[in-house]
Amino acid sequence: MLAIIAVFVMLGIAAWFLIIQPHEELIQADAGGHPSTPVSATARAVPPPPVNVAAMDINQLLNEARKAINEQRYLAPAGNNAFEFYLRVLEKQPGNKVASDALRETFPFAADSAEQVINAGNFGDAQRQIELLAKADPTNFTLTILRSKLDAQRKLQDKQQQTADQQKAQELVTQKAAADKLAADKLAEQEKAQQLAEQEKAKQASAPQPGTPAAAKPAAGETAVAGGAAASQTSEAVLVKGVAPSYPPSALRAKQSGWVVVAFTIEPNGRTSNVRVTDAQPRRVFDRAAMEAVLRYRFTPAMKGGVAVASERQQKIEFNL
Image (tube, rainbow, N blue to C red; front, side):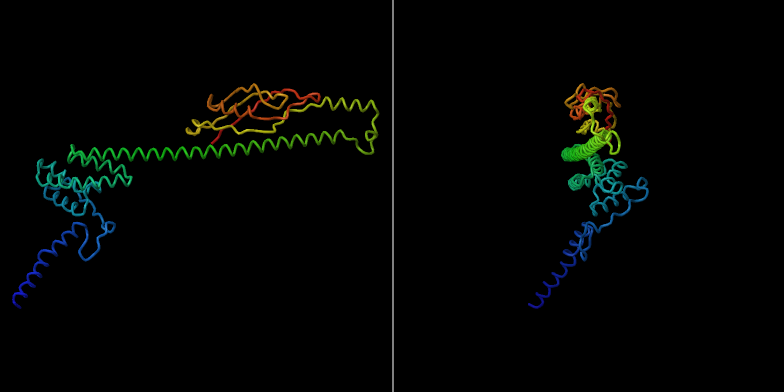
């Protein structure tokens, strides 16, 4: 019984060293690792491409291809992958059975690798890998699937980029409108302050000065003359509300700048009318936006003889990004 047990133990030990352990080492070697160390895809360094591949013979090419297969370099990197080595073998010896069988057997794994490259968004290298697969098996239906997926991913990326560009353009329009409104409000405040200063100056000039004959109480005739002078007061129209023009979307997309000179009438009620473009650069790009903005201006009308009257004005409106 002891002898029988000893025989079974010896057989088990022999099976471990001769069958199980070599099989595990082979699996680990195919995955790029070693039985004693964990396998890590990131830790595996890609060897440099062989020197002067064109001068290699068939056996050397097959040897490099087998190395690439063991390291799962089916289609990448360019110039140092299994498919390129096998295809070179077929160029040197059309119908080589080893290369043909290897390409056929590894095609599904290589296709999976190309799909992962597409999913990663590396479309240039994905296109190269698909073309390499097509050289190995041009009629394989998997190529149609890969090409369709690559095209769909490219269109999705283009759409996302277009959406991002539109959002950026809209943000620029909003920022430009806010800046123009701020500038218009500031201009209106400055003109209003100037008008108030002029009115205060005119009031001080017409007030009697102490210690002079003018400080005495005016006679009835003098009062009538002063009233006539006030009635004959004349002043220019003053902007009280400016409106920033809207930037045309087509010009914004083209990053186009320019200016428009607009002439218009200020009515006695302070509104604008008869708005027309007298000059523009470039022509017919910003005209409509400038006219629509001027139509919304509001003024303190011009005064003549103490009465509000219509007046003409011309203004240059600039469009800059």
